[in-house]
Image 1 (cartoon, one colour):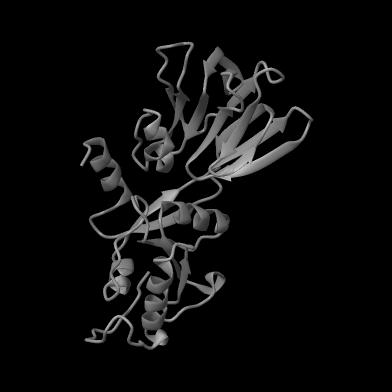
Image 2 (cartoon, one colour; image 1 turned 90 degrees about the vertical axis):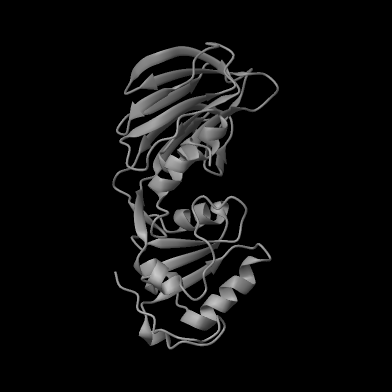
Length: 273
C-alpha cells in the first residue's frame, strides 16, 4: 500500500490536499490529550469515515487500540496507532510531519482473536471475542475451583486459584506477562495458558498450547465459589463452563513504524529494556 505525501515545509496544522494521499480515518480516545492530536492530523491529512478508509489511525493508548480492533473485527482495514497513553506497547510515537511516510514504510503484524463461549448457571450462553486474553476469575473472597480440558481431554482435574487465562501472542505481553506467563513471538503458533495466583497445584506455572487447541474451563463448585469470565473487557458472571479457541478466520493488521515491529518490541520486552 502506498500513501503519498508531498515534501513540504508546512507546519503540522497546515492543510494538505487530501487527494494527494490515500484515505485515512482518524479516531481518538476520550483522553484530553488525544483530541488536539487528532485535530492537527485531520487538518494536515484530511479525514474520512472508517468504512471508507485505506488505513485507520487510532489515537490514544493501548486500551483504545483494543477498542478500535474490536470495532473493526471482520474488516481488513489496517490500523496504525498513535500514542497518547502511557505504555503504548501497540502504538507508535507522535510524528505529525512523517505520518504518511511512516505508514507507507510500516511493518504489519497479523492478529487473530480468541472466541469465548460461556455458559452461565442459569443456562445462558454468551459469546465474545478477545484480542489479548480470555480470563476466569473468582467472584468472591473464596478461591475458584476449576477443571481444565484441552481438546476434550481433562488435563487438570482441579486448579485452585484466583483465576486462569488463555492469551494470544499479541496479548502475551499484557495481563499474561503480569501473571508471570511466557512472552510469545507474534507469529508463534501457540497460546499461553497461565494461572493467576495458583494455590493448588502450587508449583504449576501454566502451559504452552498449539494455536488450534480448544480449551474448556469448568467451574467445579459454582454455587459456593462463583466464577466470572472475561474476554478482554467483556465480562460474563456466574459461569459454569467456558470454551476458548483461536479464530483463524478473522485476521486483523496492526501497523508499526519500520524498525519497531511488534516482534522487535516483544523481543525487547524479554530482555527488560
